[in-house]
Amino acid sequence: MIKPLILFASAVILISFISKKDFVPAKITTPPGTVQLKDSLYIDKIEVTNEMWRAYTEGWLLKKENDSATYAKMQPDSAVWY
Image (tube, rainbow, N blue to C red; front, side, top):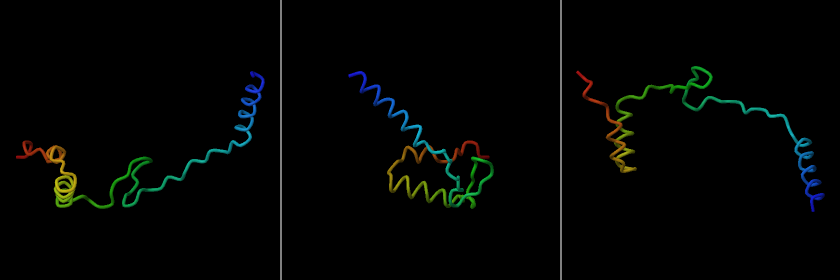
């Protein structure tokens, strides 16, 4: 019983070394609509306007997701405004 188990384990180890290919990391591409600033830092090509932000928060969070708690957290803190 032990002999076939050792033979099987040895075969698996040998096969893993034979079929091993060199690891080639995938080419990192810039996500669409962004600009790369550093190795792992990307920013959007266009500025997000207040109107775009309002359309997202009101249109998506309130109407589609019905998530008023997250909507309330995402509102600007008007206490810091003068």
